[in-house]
Image (cartoon, rainbow, N blue to C red; front, side, top):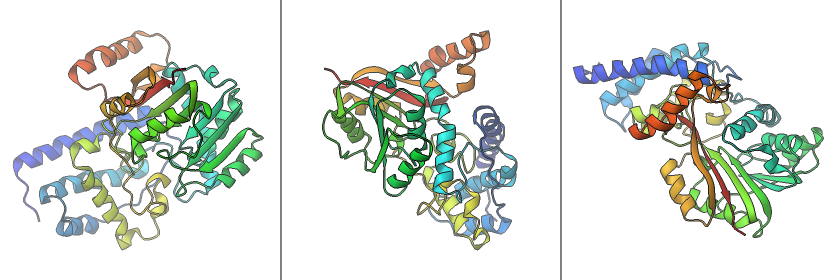
Length: 363
């Protein structure tokens, strides 16, 4: 039994209340709830052993993480999760998910002030296309000339995506393997480059922005959307713990090591498929999401090292559904607080959901 001083106990209680109220409020109100993930219930002995054996952080931190994870796993089967496919889904099922959820991408572009006519007649590059589902949806639902998507070999098979495109009746869509830091395309190859939820995962964001600039034709546009690590779900564990702001409560390594430890236990044998594919050990060496920690300031600095003409570099609020409603007093009030008050307090990034960059390559 670990003795916990009163100050640490009060911190833990406060954090637990924050998780309990905000975690469910945000997940139920703002997530799209396309899938429900039933998490395995962790036996009490797992946490007790973890406290005894876990080394990287002080014991008082173990206690806090354990308490939060106990609560989260206990109620996980009741909570709606963000729309991740199950870990045991096939590549085509994953593409189905990407394709069916891609309308949200269009909604987000519209909220950001991007007119979909920007695709008309363009040769488009999709940087980090996932399994290709969203890329195919874009091809099918815009008037673009052609679109090419690429992603890394660990997650992508171009031939499967092309077969899927053919099944959807899409013929102007091609795919390849590649890395954003070293694109295998000639200079001035595309009219438009898009990227959705990718920049936060690359090894070198600055290099990716430079490569995007290089492959664009003069007057070409880049439209890139990605979350900041400082945002409430920027930790990317929302498919596992479904709790906002974990990266602010404890060191990220503590969550990663703790979750990986739980999954290494024999009690969890054969249950990895209950986790979302995005963080399953079936597809990654551990469930630590591959994140580079980029935030709004870092993105601004990286873009400044290119010659892009910045048309837009902004964030939009976490209350995305409210943001697209009609001109109501509630909407106006919320956006006033978001745009005018929170920046002064230094809190706007915390309650944002995406960074949006729109840039033009000069003639």
